[in-house]
Image 1 (spheres, rainbow, N blue to C red):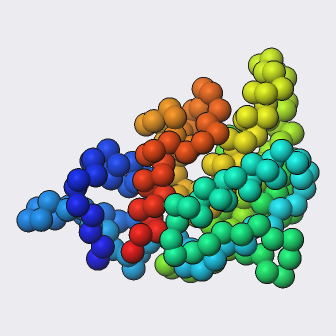
Image 2 (image 1 turned 90 degrees about the vertical axis):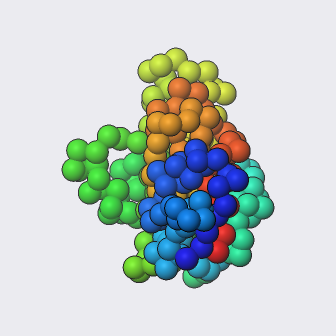
Image 3 (image 1 turned 90 degrees about the horizontal axis):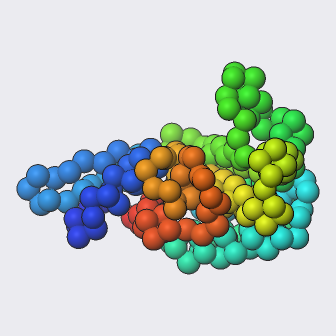
Length: 212
C-alpha cells in the first residue's frame, strides 16, 4: 500500500481517482489517502512509440515536446520515439479513422457499436496489473472536416490536432478516463478551446500514477 499525505488538496485525489482506474481508500486514523499498488494499471517498463500515417512535421515536433514533458514527470520508466518496428510497444497512427480500423479493431468495434466519433482514441493492453502495449490515434481528417464546418482558422485546427495528440499519448500511459471537471485539463471531455499544455493538476496526477 502506498500512501500520500493530505497536504495535497482533496481535489487532486478526487481528480486522480476520476482519471485513473486505481483503487483508493482514506485512512481515518492517519488522514492519508492510500492506493493498492498491486492493482495499478500502468507501464512497468520503458515505452517505445512508433509513428505511422501522415507524419506532419509540426505534430512530430509536438510529440517530441510531449514525450520530453512526460519524461520529466514520470519515474522510473522512460518514453522514447522509435523508428524500429521490432522495438516498438506503442503505436501512434496519424490519419483517417477508417484507415485505423486495420491497426486497432477495438476502435472499429467502438465506432460500429454506436460510439461518438472522436478526434482521437487510445487503448492500453496488458495483463491483470501492468500495461505492456499501447495503441493510439489522432484523426487528422476528421479534425480538418470539423474545423471547416465550424469555420476554424488554420491555427485552431493545428492546435486541436496538438490537443488530441497530447491527450491520447498521455491516456495510453494508464490515465484512460475523460472528465468534465476542469476546463484547462488535457483530460477534459468537452474542450471549448484547445488544451496544448498540461495543467498543474494534470502534472500532479501523472506523477502520482508512477510514484511507488
